[in-house]
Length: 203
Image (cartoon, rainbow, N blue to C red):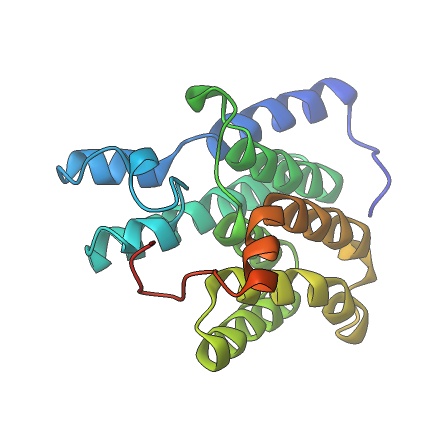
């Protein structure tokens, strides 16, 4: 992770704005706009794309996935362009925390997978692509969205080292730890064999 060399006030402003951007609950907004109900009372209650898919509206799920990923990517790219690399990594972390703990929803947010991937793609695109490919391969083999997220998160620091991007290693480890923390209930269901597969209604 780069040294924090930018002015502290600039970094604080970047963190605040990135957090607020990350806090926008696109899944909730989209499902309400389309008359699909309150996403938090559907399926798992999660605000991410996987739960939006349980409404049966694939377009809404795709839009949620893209916009949630864009939150992290836009925060990183704008901070990098306006301030520097240290601000970019701080913005990625802040946007991710915004998605997990959004002020607009009483700090009860999503699990951050799309935002995690979008952040990595903007910070170090080879690492992001490798994480996306890991998610896709695991999903194709197992049909478990949660397991795919866990494998992609755990391997992201490994990809950072293999692909020669050590500058994102610390942040990748931190984001991966948060992904695992937010998936604790999924891990328990995976171990119990009760985790729903992709596209299946939650029982």
